[in-house]
Amino acid sequence: MNIKHSKLEAINLDAYYGDFHALKNINIAMEEKAVTAFIGPSGCGKSTFLRTFNRMNDYIDGFRIEGQILLDGRDIYTNDVRVDELRKEVGMVFQKPNPFPKTIYENVVYGLRIQGIKDKKILQETCEKSLQQAALWNEVKDKLDKSALALSGGQQQRLCIARALAIQPSVILMDEPASALDPISTAKIEDLIYELKKDYTIVIVTHNMQQAGRVSDHTAFFYMGELVEYAKTKTMFTSPKDTRTQNYITGRFG
Amino acid sequence: MPHIDVELERLREKLLEMWDLVEHQLTSGREAVMNADHELSQRIIKLERKVNSFDLKIDRMCENFFALFTPVAVDLRTVLAILKINTNLERIGDTAEGMARFACKLERPFDPELVELTNVMVMYDEALVMFNECRIAFKSEDPKLAKQIIKRDKALNKIYRKSDVVIAKYLQNNPDRIPEGLALLSIIKKLERVGDQVTNMAEEIIFYREAKVVKHRKKKKKKE
Image 1 (cartoon, rainbow over the protein chains, first blue to last red):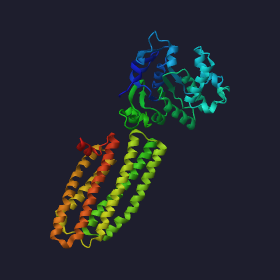
Image 2 (image 1 turned 30 degrees about the vertical axis):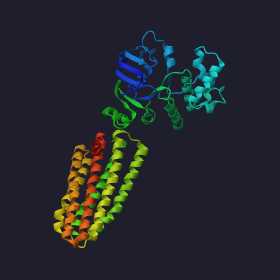
Image 3 (image 1 turned 90 degrees about the horizontal axis):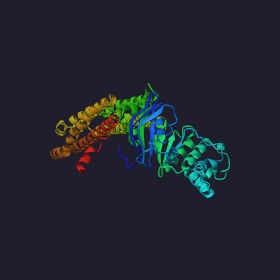
Image 4 (image 1 turned 90 degrees about the vertical axis):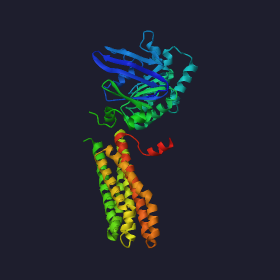
């Protein structure tokens, strides 16, 4: 598949949890300012793969990788890469909204505070901008000093997206960001992804086939640690090449 | 069998039922035209309502299937193909009805000489074979057979292209038979359409089985 400009790339990537071979020789290039969806049955390795892009697996006992992960052409697993710097560049949003037990405002500026930024003007401006980008500003602008835990699930998830955006990453990883949300909140997250891809490279793991179809430009299907098929989303959902892909997306697996 | 397959099978069965009905119309149409059989013609015309209700029913079933199963890949292509085959079958039903209406107006069977000269019955038989084989190709999900059917349409087109000259010549020699000649020309035109519609249906079978679009290919080649 032709990629205009590759933002993220995996080259001959293998990943192991101890003896378990979780990812097998993955080669893939992901386009900048586009949405790439990872699909596949539970345990296929898609979340493991997603987490290699900001080294979230590093702390898991026995986890190791072979091969390369490139961000803007640079290997992120070399010794000179600082993980905290990497995570400023590669933000992440998880399945369950996980706001801190703090105010809405403090949640959004949390990343800036730990970077040592104290300038109130910068903090306030970033807070507003991030909440606007996350399509949450109008709903919370009058209660920034209220607890984030008082927000609805959908609002909490958009708050987490705003928190990720505040540190100005170029890549956002999303691990099933809407699977715990109702259809209206899901639609808001999907619209948000559509807006955000103008400025960010987004990689999303989803179990919802229709969601992958609606939000992504490219789709990668994983099965048993292998990248089975990677194609434009339109092609993937109309005429997949591999029988395993077809069986999975049409719900006839196993 | 997974629920989605049960629903797809129901759709296919319904389409095949409609196929049988239209086949009956088309086959009877041959007899009606051959023998100027007014009674049979009337029965063919009456069947149109039944074909229309099949058309509506299948449209509705496809709409429901899209809404409830949001199909993708081969499932999506299958339902798209069924929708289009349904439309073409309904039109072939209309064509059969149209031919029956001509047969109704005939005072006597066509002049055997004219039938012989125009090759209209050869054309009719060829159209029937195409139509029946297309049903087999759909039922057995056989894109190879579908490709063969598309090639057969040439024979119909050949007869159609010659027909106006042949009929004009015949009418010059038999000026008292003008209405008969015009009716036959119209029937030939309708048979040519049947060939095109069966071709469309065969193309849909290739599309849904092989994910290949084969329609309008000739035009593209000409442009190049």
